[in-house]
Length: 206
Image: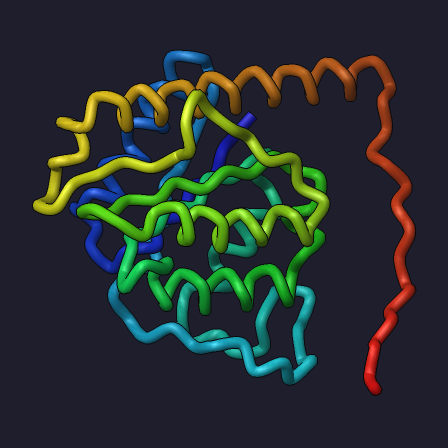
């Protein structure tokens, strides 16, 4: 079993990366493999709703979205991390995930997901809510913890001084590992994925 994590910060050594590292270390203790994917510092396109998605993901391949989608198809669960900018997630991570989910929802469906939010001070609740919406629209079980998955720090590495934040991240990893084992046992017992309905689209235009 493998958890694919996304560092939605352009800083590969910042607090968001540090927070994901705490989750990764705890997952390893639980016998769960993980990988942290760096969104990088290069430009990230917005989704323009062009409808030209391909089997590989987005038609635009000049950033790392399709590389992430390829890994997502093989992953069993996800943790998306974001720093907080102006009381909302990084615009880069939202553009990145918009295109990944719009083009390749099937790579994520019915797989557990969780978000991790890092801030100096405020804006974590709104950012946490925004990130979790990707799971709700994609039939993904959302993994919780003993508090909302937030950690605080300004300078790189300061999140490790947030004792409750670290505890929350570790408990998130434990809950993720537990759910993955439950899903694995269910699969062994012949529990199939839900045969959900599709096709209905209602537009209320007056």
